[in-house]
Structure formats: C-alpha cells, structure tokens
Length: 405
Image 1: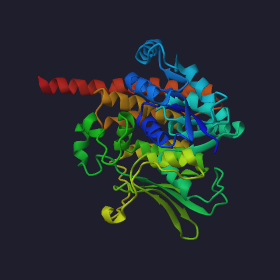
Image 2: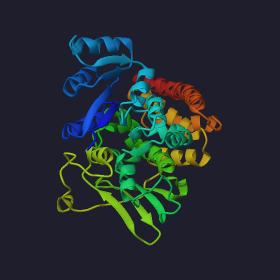
Image 3: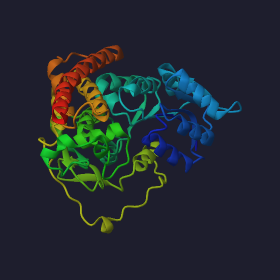
Image 4: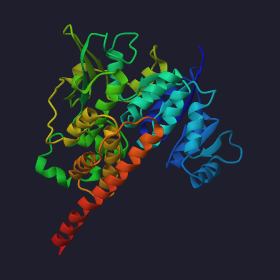
C-alpha cells in the first residue's frame, strides 16, 4: 500500500483537526507534507510537533515569526507565509492528496492550484464551487484531479450514487438530489424573536461542532443554499432537481431519489470524521474513530419542509443559481461580509439576508471566464455589501441611541 502524502489547508479549523485525528489512527497510510493555519498559531505549533510536516504556512510575517519561535531552532518544519505559499504546498510534486478546508474565498486559489496540479482533492471549501463553479470544474478536468466532497451532505450523495459516477447524473437514473439540513439553532424560535438573536446563540449548533462563520450560515440556512450551488457543479444537476429537507436529528446526511422509486441514503452519527475518512481512503473504508449508529437509541427520524420566511437565505441561493454566471459569487461574498458584521455586532441576525438580497439585486450578473474575473466579481460584491451594511447598520445604531436616551 502506497502512502498518501497530504497537505492540509486549514489544519487548525474543525475540519483540519478532524482530518488529523483520522490520519493519526493510520500512520501506515498517511504522511503529512504541509499544514496551514491562520490565527491559531499555538494549535498549529502543536500539530507540527506531532506530525512533523515539511512545511507550515501561515498568513503573514508576524505569524511566521511567532510560529518559528514556538517550534524552536531544531524544528524540521520550515515555516512559510502568504497566499503564494499556500498555492505552492497545494501543488507540490511530492503531494498526492490535498484537504482544502480554508473557509471562504481565502481558500479558492490554493484549491484551484491543487486541481490544476492533478491532486486527489478533498474539498471542504464549498465556496470554491460557489464562487467559481465552471472555472473550478474545468480546472479539475483539465488537470486530471480526483475531486471528493467532504461536506457531509455531498459526501452522502457521493456514497449513494452508482459506482463509477463521473460528475454528471444524465445516465444514472437519478430523479433528484435531497440535501438534508438540521434547521440550526433557531428552527423553533418564534419569528418575532429572530432579530434579537446574538452571535453566541447563532453559533450554538444543536448537532455539529463548527467554526463561527459556518455556524451562523447554518442558523440562516445559507450553508444549505451554498450546498445547493455546490451540488449543481459537483453532480452536474440543475437547480430544479435539488431539494432541501429539514431533518433535525442529522442522522440521514442526504439522499438520492431514483426514477424507479428507490431512495438511497447515507446514515451515520453527526461527526465529520466519517466523510473525511471515506474520502481519504476511497474506494476503501477505514476506521474513522466514530462510534456506530444505534438506531434504537435515536428512536425516530423526522422531516419537514424548510420555512422560507424563517430562512430567506435559502431562497436567495436558489435565485442566485437560477441567475447564474457571477450571481453565486456575489451571493457568497455578500454573505461573508454580512456574517462578519453580525459577529462584530454591527448587524442584527435578520439583517444578514437583507444585505445579501440588496447586493444580489444591485449587481448585474456577468460571465466568469477565469480566476481573475471571479476575484473581481468577489471584490465588487464585497464593496457593495460593506456599503449595504453601513446603510442598514446606521438606522439600527440611531434606534439604539434613541432607546437608551
């Protein structure tokens, strides 16, 4: 058995930590070539000491100096910094497999670098396909890369599709794809209370342990909207054949509905190590460290249609996919800015969707031919979103001032 040589982009986040947990269980299968981290330098140093990668990549020079100090002069790990270094460790000749787990637009360039270099690409960065779907899929095909989805929903779909599936459902007998969603922490919150929900409340996911940005996306169900767009590119299926079903127990991770009446589903405990282990070992299966599913203990599985009044971001994602071209890029960028503003206390929870809707309406969609065009559309949308945040937040600040006086 030939060892896989791994670069893990976003090693200090929840996906990266779970990936290293699986890797540590199978030292005979995996070797770490490079790890990257952003602000959690202490955690990255601990990971470097445990796994001894050849390279560690951080954001800037100050973070690099801090990491070198923590690792000490005798460390075998060379510390690099900057976006170009991320691209380099993703495309390095020695690397066979790349876990792309950097959240948001920041992970796009390095994910593309891995695709162009023909790597086995484990994609946890959904924004890469949301922002640059056609550009990204073309890079995968032109580079001869193997693309394996890490999102639990898309991984479940991949497991439920016929063997030999090649990114297109035309000849697979598939009627539709069903993405399941937990409904997040506010599924039962009275609508009139949503405006008052705090960042800590939004980040208290009932089933999954995730970073703050993706936790807020779960609370708004924008994460499911982004997954709809991601599914369109991963599986070559139009929006009308992708549906969403709220499943609070998070036991069925997604389903494939076939034309003969069969429905194939993947079930398991809500733990990201399951899809990570499946992608790392595909087409084999290895121990992930996740306990087996006890359906008797679960007791029941429930389902409900999503309420678009409660989750307007879901409809905004469908609309962006229907518009096409740069609209999904605009949606993603506006959402990132709005979520960051919410986490900083500049917006109310219910104003996240308001910002996204305003930017999506104001910026006309146009064709994206390459990464430069994608990043320009992203930049334009972020500027529009910041302006929208400022205009929406100002009345909120004035209202608070009036209330306090």
